[in-house]
Image 1 (cartoon, rainbow, N blue to C red):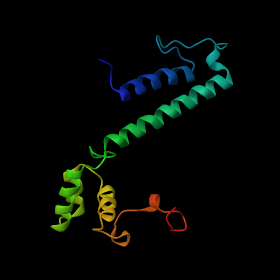
Image 2 (image 1 turned 180 degrees about the vertical axis):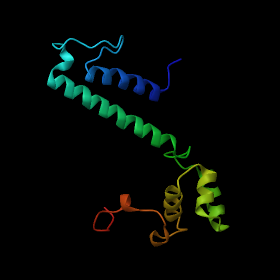
Image 3 (image 1 turned 45 degrees about the vertical axis):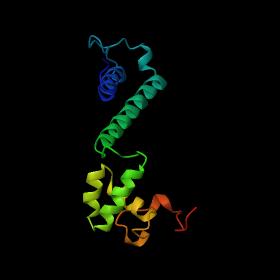
Image 4 (image 1 turned 120 degrees about the horizontal axis):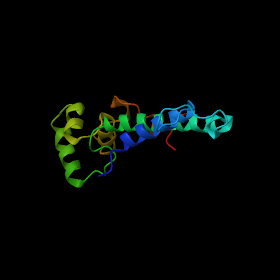
Amino acid sequence: MQPPLKNQFQKARAVIQSLVQGIDPENGIELPKDSIVNKIDVNRALTMGVFALDQMMARLTRRAQLPESVGKTWTFEEEQQLTHEAASGEPVAAIATKHGRTVRAIEARLEKMGFLSREQRTTDTSFLTSPKGDDT
């Protein structure tokens, strides 16, 4: 079985970071001064690789903290349940937890379904509008 992606990124980062520092990642011995990793363009490229892996690991960490249904299509049954919950006056945060979605997603769906106006939303809707405030 293949190790989780985050572990692969961490191992790759450790290897590349060793090379950036001029160290053989297998035995920890300093590489010769004329080694390819000591050329400025190669070292800069390796450093950018470390940066890119750090960014990817940070994204994986953030993604792992999101509710389980983020990005999933809404089913008819789920919308029916949401209709009932909204009509019952359940708090949006509680509904979000039940559905495994973010508060932002619940508010957006409630707005789309006519249960909530844009002005009633507590979450930012800037991704839905242009900088001038009109839909595009």
